[in-house]
Image (tube, rainbow, N blue to C red; front, top):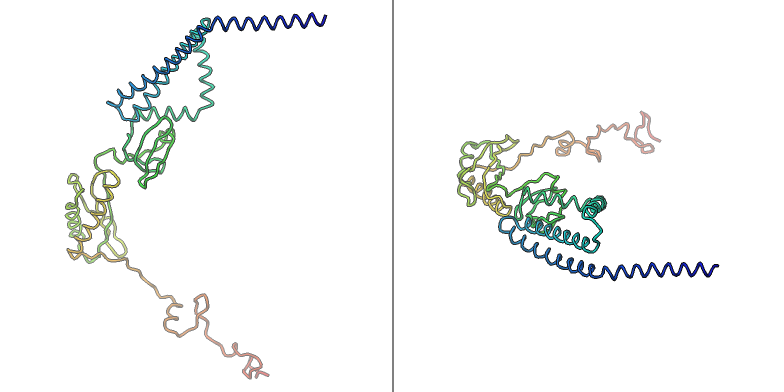
Length: 324
């Protein structure tokens, strides 16, 4: 009885194996065609990516062309995979495949939330284009030149020559200062003149000096405004417009400061140092005059009392009695 059951189970397993083998043999032509379709789809996706990249580079930024061409290649290859599945399994309907992909995409979305968020933020940045490659920006307290916007991050080369990678979602959600968006930017520095000099003359000298500096824009022209009355100087703020790029702007700023100083010196306008007022406290006066002893903390000692300073046993008076 047991051997009969074992023999029946063996025949059932063998029958299942033969059925699977027959199915594989029968579907092998379709599998071969599916593999050919996948290989052709891979080559087609590469071709589509190359064509899109060349076409978009003529009208858009390099970052936009690179990201969009890559997404186009992925979509082409994904459609090829769907076609290969439909050829291999004719009984599977495209609607069922799309429904399965919808559930699968939800699972992928939860698993790779950060990657998908950065990708979507990168696509939105490329379409909105608040800045482009080559612009100088400041975001999240990081300033530098934009190297590229990839699918995942924005690459910035800082002004001291370092590469910073900022996730696209952080860039998209943060305040961005685009330094090179406009053709000109304004710079300013403060000059302090002595109270004995006329501020009106000083402002005219400063404006004339700034107008002669190479790189300072003529329209809008430079200006000098009295901004504050300090303890020892009259503060004048010198303003001018120049090219927005960091290196050029710093060079013009240095030249402007040197030109203004030379012009003020030539006009006899004094640039005094800060005046420091010292008020003599009692301990300071006592130390200078030498008429009192000081404690280690700097205070003045009380006047000496011979009756209190007497030491017993020395013959001096102690509390009105001779010492023993």
